[in-house]
Image (cartoon, rainbow, N blue to C red; front, side):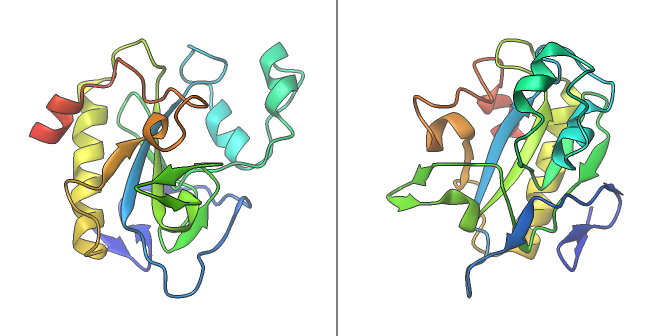
Length: 178
């Protein structure tokens, strides 16, 4: 797996409008692991892609009416099948972390990469998702020298009390072992 000009070379691309340039001279130094399922606790259907490109139909599900106005994105989605979809160049700022702080630094979107795993807090992730996340992490480390094995965290760790993902179902020991 390789990165060229901020994009994975072997993944599907679905460009999100919900992004902008990072502040000058800031490069990624943190990988944030998230989870998402739309509708909640349901997988497949293409709704996550629609959500990240502002095309989620609020009439398709009652929950969508609550969130369809939001402008959010992640750099990458790893579906339960292992399919990868990239929405934002890793060189740009995706809108995934919201109000956040990591080791005293606020506004994590400025210096982080957000990877969404299709899933929910209390349902086991698939082995292929862990494998793909590990491959992506290694490619990112090769591309961005400030990313290390230690600079991977969950959304819950940078937005405690506000976010819970990737949740108790995410096996950090297994992931770190890969």
